[in-house]
Amino acid sequence: MPRVALIPGDGIGKEVIREARRVLESVPVSAGFDLVEWDLGADRFLRDGVTITDDEFRTLSDEYDAILLGALGDPRVPGNEHARDILLGLRFRLDLFVNFRPCTLLSPEFSPLKSVAGKVDLEIFRENTEGVYTGMGGVLRQGTPDEVAIEEDVNTYRGVERIIRAAFEYAERRSRPKVTLVDKANAMRWAGGLWRRVFAEVSAGYPAIATDMMYVDAMAMDLVRRPEHYSVIVTSNLFGDIVSDLAAELTGGLGTAPSANLHPGRHALFEPVHGSAPDIAGRGKANPMGAIRCVALLLDHFGETDAAGSVESAVHAALEEGWSTPDLGGGRTTEEVGEWIARRVAGGAGSAG
Image 1 (cartoon, rainbow, N blue to C red):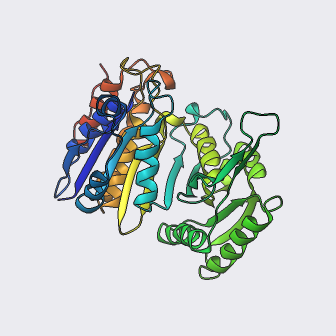
Image 2: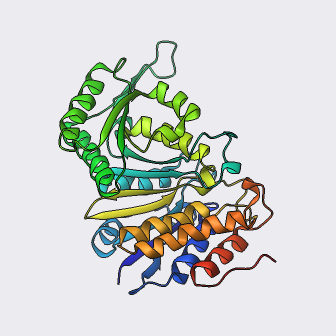
């Protein structure tokens, strides 16, 4: 039985993880899951002065098969020390080098593009452990008119090769027609050159898959103009952060968007894309669909493809039948949406009362 750590975190994370758990416990699967909730977040940090310990990292690494995380961030911790230590700590210490962001148009009415030319269905592979997120760099003469601030953009052959290969392996496995590299090689000579050379090397081993390359600014424009033109996108940490949020907004908003942080064959952490949204926490307005769709990714990760499909289908059905939260124009609460989807995946038809 797979063991899954639940980290509700902060703000609306607690609310959406509660509904994600409800759905996961409702899905008919052969073995089930051992779900254990962890007290990691701002409340624990403010109470005990602890973010996450080395022993807790080791336990999550050695004794759990996956992690389902809600959201981290709390105005009571203005420096967000706990969020940095927990989330970035897990990503780097577990070497979760793949940030996988599926962006599927749930319904044309939820896209700001009111006349989408075709079906939008793309996946983004964002490198997750390098780039400007390593924290390398420094500052000189801070607080003076002569201040100099430097952020280092770290790109290694190993890091670039494995994320590009992961994108092509996925495209081959899922019969996706094309992989697009997004970079800024015209301005970032050395990093761009590395990404393009490795992309050419890896793509040569997948002759049946079409390829193209786009500068990140051109991609931002093209995703708005013709998002249906793309299927699998692979890019760096910073550009992936930006492009994936844009794609999520085009396909229904951050409230519906799931993600997976993966080291294939070793570790997996699933989290909705949205933040902790403290302004609406506790008010029943949070959209649980992103977290619930993380459940679908988790199920697929463990080979429960039919169950994963049933969760996705239930989310689509909820939207079609008007069971949505205020961010999508609906009047249902977080709990009501979660309960409806849970009944649906458990085999019930739900109700429209």
